[in-house]
Amino acid sequence: MKKTLIFCIFLTMASVAGIWIYAFTNTYKPHPVEAAHIQCLPDTPNLPENRPLKVMSYNVQYMAGRDYIFYYDLPGMKGPDKRPSASSVDENLMRIANIIKRESPDVLLLQEMHNGHSATDHRNLLAELQQRLKKLYPCTARTDYWRSSLVLHPKIMGAVGMELVTLSKYQIQEATRFQLPQTPKPWFSGPFHIQRAILETDIRTEVGRLVKIMNTHLEAFPNDSDVKAKEVDFSLRLLRGYEAAGIPWIFGGDLNLVPQEQLDLLNTEERYLYSYPSELTTLLERFPSIPSKSALSKGKSPKWLTYSPNRYEDIAPDRTLDYVFYAPDWRKVEGYVLSDTEAHLASDHMPVVAVLEFVPFVAN
Image (cartoon, rainbow, N blue to C red; front, side, top):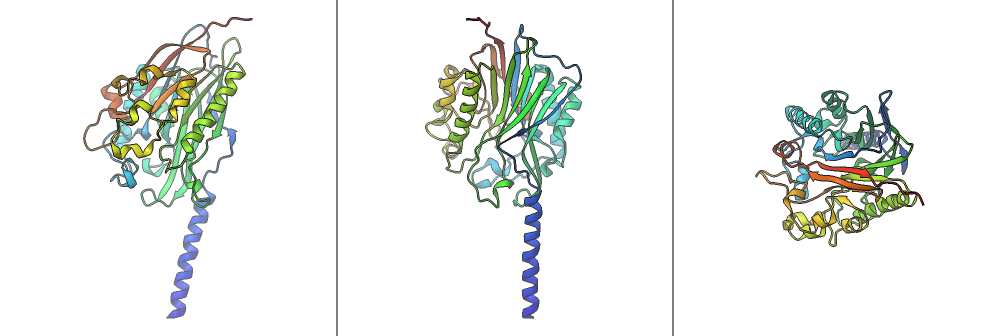
């Protein structure tokens, strides 16, 4: 009996170790800098300099919509829902495709795009979205920021796959993935967590000028660490380098950073996700943005709120988390947040739109 018990314990431990080794081996472990995937149709044009460029940043929340409170939506991972239904994903794919077609931005920055994730039945949401957009965007750049064949989290217990995606009406010459600083985690579990990144795309104008467009999704759950400050510092060094080199750039995405003026207006249970003072201040004081520093200084101005928490009651957007920053080489033509009914139903984030034009170049 004793030998049988020892054998059973050994067999159980060996099985658990084998499962972990399989999962760890089949988990994405990115390099600090690596090439991202590009796909462009032939004869895609270069960016014209004589007309405005419309950029939209949109966290689509993997097309889940607003009918759920996911486990990560409540403190302590106590949300009741693990995944959306297939019909919800279908419905919100159509809503989001309608929003994109209606706005028709020249460059589209998408976050939380599932590809092979068990929570969305291993679907490739980019491929399905492209089918609905009908070749509106001839160029695509994408990179993983969460990829594993098996995550042994009780709320997941399956494969994960999530991408940053940039769609462009203009030729993408090169795409690069920059690994961002991560929340400290043990070596044996770190790779199973989201690997935050910047997806950078290089676009040339018709006269040959290089433009850098960056898409990102910063840390949502810092766990009392300084990871957000490190992410902002990393981003600033990148942007200052391009500014010093005279390269026009645009930097957008879900930054998960609340303006200083909104911190005190949040519910107590929400404040633990953010730092005081806000790390966003460094970016706002250094570069122009949509929403702008002056617009955000007014606190909870409804027209600039981009995030609506998933709750049982219908909650209007109550904070700003999504932004488009741009280099001084650009000037704003128009900027706004889409918060109509369709956008409110499609995702917990509202799209942010920036229409920019080049500042006329004056040689010395």
